[in-house]
Length: 268
Ligand code: NAP
Ligand code: MN
Image 1 (tube, rainbow, N blue to C red):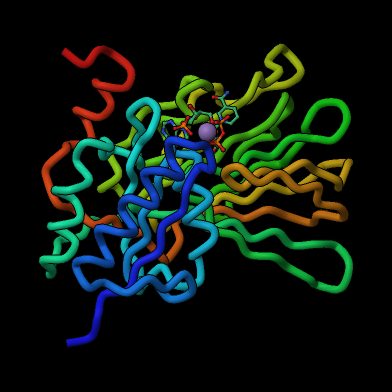
Image 2: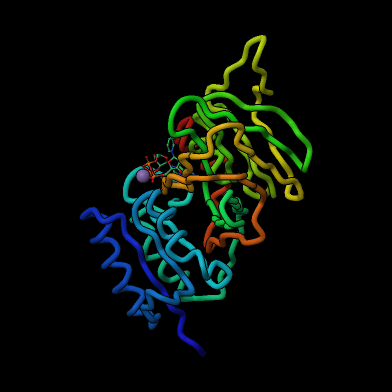
């Protein structure tokens, strides 16, 4: 049988690095192979931010990789294993086959005015769009139909698993990650007798596309998860549920709503 190949990413602080070394030793003892470039399993040790980083590092082999998140700080949504569970975790990994769960991702296509160039991104949490100076002004189209002209600080388009992150701070709903959907949430929209936006977060199903078209300015500050980039000469930004998914190895039940409760309400 082929050996299972694994990689481990660490947040980089001492506690995460120590845990990473320990897991690596255990997994090698169980005859797994360490392969940073083509892992079947990626273990992220740190927080949700560490898993976001690991996701983007292995973004070109999502169909061949399962992710596992161990948290060295507070409980995370992606980092939901505790350090004292790692022995159990290692045994479960070594004893394949293991179950996996898939979460939807957000596809972002940015098209530019010069020469029909375009860039495609995948987000695990969200994409946000802000102006570089002054209010963001964007025509919003949904499924090819004009919807509104947005004026305000910015827009946030999130995945279901990202709905507990930035989206939640903006008053967006928490979506169960089994839903194939994306959510658009406003950042401080301007609403008066002249300017009007919907005001509520919108949840779009898998077969709908949202499109933002700049009204004046064509330069924007766009984030994809933890990554921020300045994009110039933007013609449009398109959002939809991606055809790719992220897979998590599932070794025990930890229902999403329980994670929500433990993270935001209380953990008794
Ligand atoms: P960060 O500043 O450390 O992240 C902010 C917080 O969001 C951290 O506590 C992080 O957890 C948590 N988080 C990340 N993904 C989450 C998820 N899916 N559900 C619930 N909480 C989540 O930066 P980062 O660690 O690189 O994470 C980037 C993310 O920060 C972005 O994708 C965005 O969602 C979020 N963010 C939020 C706001 C806001 O709420 N106002 C503003 C900017 C960015 P860990 O400590 O475990 O990493
Ligand atoms: Mn973080």
